Image 1 (cartoon, rainbow, N blue to C red):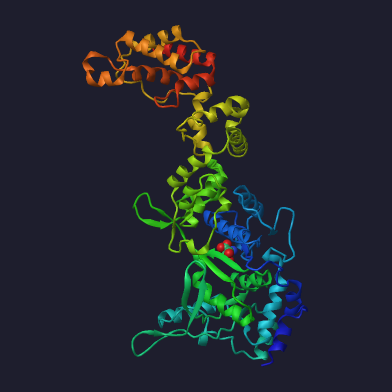
Image 2: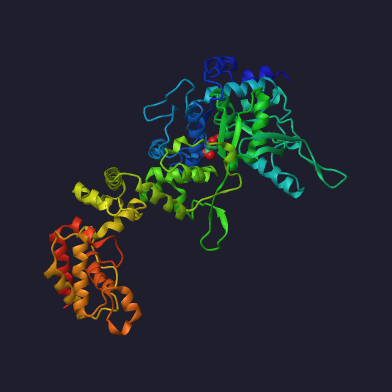
Length: 560
Ligand code: GLU
């Protein structure tokens, strides 16, 4: 068979040669050891935590080494394309502090190794497919869906591995005439790799024997897998490549040094190894990241995060809840590198970028994702963010995700004081976690959100409630300091038969109705609607005298 003739017949429109592309995209001129990484999301409109997890690894590897991190849009699966998805990808990664040096961007492509959108690269892929065909390493296959279905049925009946390979690859050895005839008849076809591999066979020892391939993975060590033997489709009927072929061509031509991708690609790695080999190119360094897992609330067992069951898999979840990007970043770093937490303890105030990120400290067995842990980390992270910055962040969040709270940001001074409450104490309060939680935590400062949430203490008889509040209002002086203010509460407690010191009440419960804490809880509930809150005096100072008095008065009147 004259393979060159076949290649020319199948791809008459391709006039460029592989050498032309090699020249167009020469090896990058980067310092020794600089890593080139990429993120290759599909524009499905759904950005998940795994994308961000991988993106952090990519970003760190490239930027720590003085390399390049680029964005490639992997849209070869046109069924999955969602309008506006590219903007979603760029915006959501940008929000979490992931910035690309090169690749697809809001203002078109940036960089000399593009086009960075796979669907625009048809002629490039076709040129390399043409080369494989011309060398007898790939061939057109005219099998219909139906025929493939029949082959599968036969294979299943014979307990053979399903797929197109060996004797089942019926178009593999077609003559030029057969091919010409099929094309003339307008039959659609794909291009398949002509694999050199063979399926493993059972030996006399009862074990499976077959050739294997070894690949070094920077996260997992040396992988040892059965070789590929499938005549995998590399070019679809549309002239668009499959993921496998696009990956090999793009990562070669874009001079990627490290391919960070999810563990779901491990089973197809032998295909990629064979493709790289057939192209005569070096393998990039693969870094197959761990699956993101969580503890299932119902079963208590570890399982994969699921799009259907776990809203926290979507990046939109974090934006909608209003997690601060620094908190998410800090958390992801703790699950990305097992030594990060230790480093953070030793360097509490250092920027996260000072940490030296390595692939060998990445988990390979399933990274456990835990929202509670994220929340804990978020509390620490938010504590370090000045209240004014937090105000800007929350205001922005509300404009985008919760316009019903926009008015809360009208009085900046008031909001900043609220956000700073208890944060500068010797033992600072860690009340703030994420925007929705913060709004609900501070809602009592705003009349339209204020409501009575908790019960009055049972130690206080109903008739004492207005009494306590009336006495409180009579003696209230907004200029009292914290000590003076509390002495007045003590005095009220004493006059009404409550122990001034809680421990006296505990020792002699029969001698008192309750203690000073119960009295102050009545005030707390009248003011905040809650029995637990930050320091009441400090809250009153922020609320101002008028709001303080009117809340107390209203509650007293309602309880007469
Ligand atoms: N487009 C692939 C995906 O969405 C990317 C895999 C890769 O990074 O090679 O999963």
